[in-house]
Length: 294
Image (cartoon, rainbow, N blue to C red; front, side, top):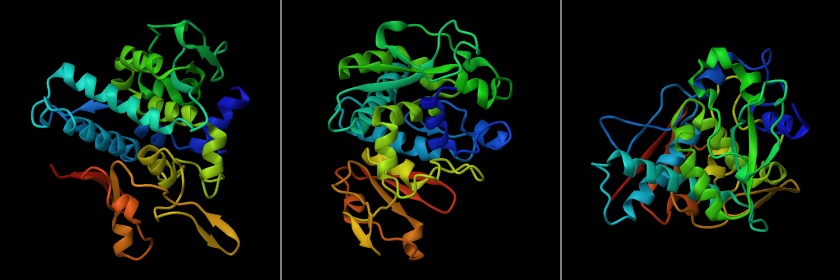
């Protein structure tokens, strides 16, 4: 794997990631797509513990997109509208993650027609390189495996938001099939920039996904909620023993509340408590859920 690809894996999974360092069960738990519930047509389903750190923010922004559309109702959403909602939502989050001084966007997606040996890196590829790409997502997670998964994906770069939108719509089946959640997470990270994320995380040696328990870090949640991978939930920055601790700098579009505050482990600032829309992610010791009012 290339140095850039290795850097991405280390950021997400830790430096011990691989067949011997990361529990296979954790990778398998994250290997799912964005799947709509059959009983609640605007609800995204989660099958195993862990990926709620990505699914819950996407669900929150999906509801925000739904509530700002006059024709939509959260009780009844036909399949074509589900596609439009999800794709719009993914684009909203990617646009938010794009660095202020950059107008480039990235998607992590499958490499077309290459062997594992030829694609053992996450490499640059122009946006027009492929419209219809090979999708190994039908393979069982155990069959594909951690190493092979990362050998079969690459980075596609886009110079404009309209180009990105077209690609997100074209790859709808990628997002809804197995590995869609991970591919979207990688897309957000690559759009934001690995170095930019490292500069915002309090401890850059701690991976975004816990290698033991498989849950997403607060930095990962904040990245998807606000576009900034800061490790704290208070308003603004603070100084502690000469160290600058980064917090939330403006009112969030959707909010965040946590049980940890009632236990006095942290204090959530008003930027997350009072978001622009009445939609909140609720954090407990083990899970994230979405609460909203309409």
